[in-house]
Amino acid sequence: MTPYKVIQGADGKYTITPAPGQAVDGVTVFIDAARAMKAANDLNKAGDTDTDIEVETTIVPDEVRKVGNKYYYVYAIEPKDVGLGEEEPTIYFYYESDYLYDPAKDVPLKEGISDIADFAVSFGNLEEIDDKLRGNPLDLLIEDIFAETKRNPYLLMKEEDGAVNNLGEDVGGEYAVLYTYLEDLFEAKGFDTKDYDLRSPALLALSAEERAYASALFLGSDVKSNASLKALQDKAMLEVSSLMLRYGLTDMDEDLVEVFYDLRYKGQLNTQTLAEQFRLAVFTELPGYRDPKITQAMKDNNIRMSQSKAYMKKVDDRIMSKLGKQLGAGFSKEDKQYLTNVYGIEGGEAILDAELQEIWDSNVAEKYKGRNYATVMAGLRPVLNREGNFDENGRDAEFVQDLLRSENDVFKDARKYFLSIGDQGAFNKMASTLKASGLRNVISGGAVTGLY
Image 1 (cartoon, rainbow, N blue to C red):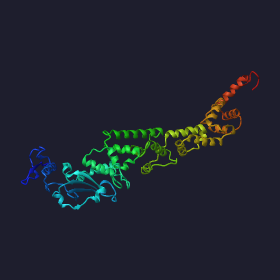
Image 2 (cartoon, rainbow, N blue to C red):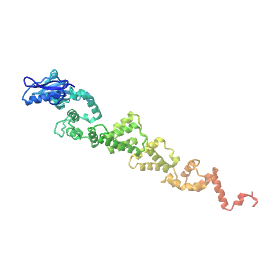
Image 3 (tube, rainbow, N blue to C red):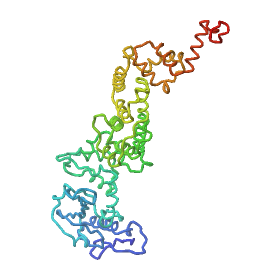
């Protein structure tokens, strides 16, 4: 970078000239032309001089506007440059100066600035521009600006027509957040979230959860150095993982997990709405409003919500307790998956119990109605185990169903059944009974009685 030196001409006016090789002292020799020019201007003003200083510079705006003795170096940001639709207005920013430099004389010069005032942001005095932004700052930073709008969608929020911010400014139809961001970027004002709130009614209108995320974004996107973003990230992870454990969905599709996490992290869902959307995603047959982003993500990725293993087990256990294995065998896997939906509504288990009770009552004898398989069998098992080698879920499963439909005496039916199938336990019991009745000699041999 070539240093520039402030010199005084024969007419007493100050100007600048390149000073290659000379040491920069910040008094007469400066690191660049902008700083030298500012010093020259200050000296000229101090001496009550007035001049149209023409120096070598690279400041070439899109156009120059003139209002009185002031010049406005105007640059334009086209909507497409920052991801807006073509129907949106062009955004302008400008630098002010008392001088019209040589290169700028070749660009369009217009009188007045009122026609673009609603879509323009001032970045201060041209002579104070940082050397890194020499030329069109937008050309140098457009990629960063575009990336920032992608990272922080709140930058592209458009204010409602007629909106007035807390500074009393009419910002209707404008991109107040973007203007504030650009102003902070080029003027390095160090704006915090309160400054954005003051300037943008749309930002203030966000939900508490969205505002928390937006406020954190304005502090930077590096989670390691941004404690606010890190806290939001941790909270979202904890809530989503807790719901996965609650519903027994530790094997949920990773893409769907990411959708839930992203919506919660960015504040589009709060704790309550996240839990509700998760419930509706788990219990797919329940009525309710489902977030389009979630349903679209499931459709795009061909995701079918994994059935909760915990709730499937609950349904299985309930069927077994109410109906038993044989009667409950009529439920297919799809039937059971459907029944898991009852656990997604308040009092759902009672509804399931009522449905199962109706099935039970229509398939058992009158004396067993109003009860269930578990309680009935708790009373029958001791009887059946005494009459034979009872195999409830194997050999004797059909007999159990016959018994449950019969009004006959259980003892007689059981004894008859076990003897008819040649159950060894039944024969042993019969032999034991005969022995206890004093008929041992008859069974052991006929020599004593002469009977064969």
